Length: 154
Image (cartoon, rainbow, N blue to C red; front, side, top):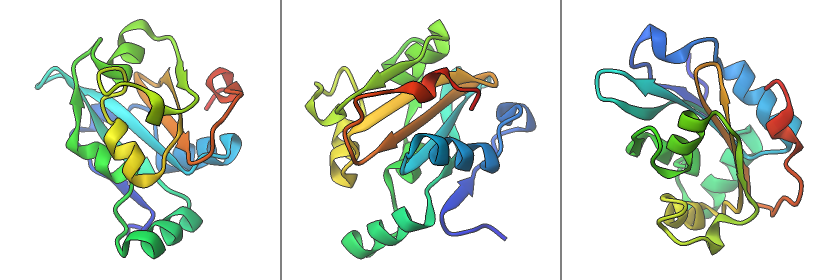
C-alpha cells in the first residue's frame, strides 16, 4: 500500500538503481528537508525524469492545511523533464558535481526552471547531488546557509 506522503512512479527497473523510499526519507531526516526527489535518466527519451519522491508526514499535513490538497513541490516534479546539462538537475547529472541554492525564489527562471512552482509551495533552499546513477534533490521552506548534506553518503 502506498503511503500518502510518498510515491514511486516506475519507468523501468533500471531507472531506480539502488534508490528507494527509505533513502529519500533518510536524506530528508539528515538534512532537515521537507522533500526529496530522485531524478533518473530515461534512455528511451534521453531525459531525466522524477521517478520517486518523499515528503515527511508533517509537511503533507502542512500543505493540505494550506491548499486543501496533497500536491507538493515534490509531486509536481513529475511534470518536468530535463536533458542532461539543462537546468540544475541536468547540470548535476552531467557534471556529477553537487549544486545548492540558498533561496530559489530569488533566482531568474532560466537559472532554476521550477522557481515558480517552488514559490507556490514556499520552497526556498534546494540542494542536489549525483547519487546512484541519478540526481537526488532535497529542499526546505527555510533558507539554509549550510549545505553539508551534499557531502554525505545519502
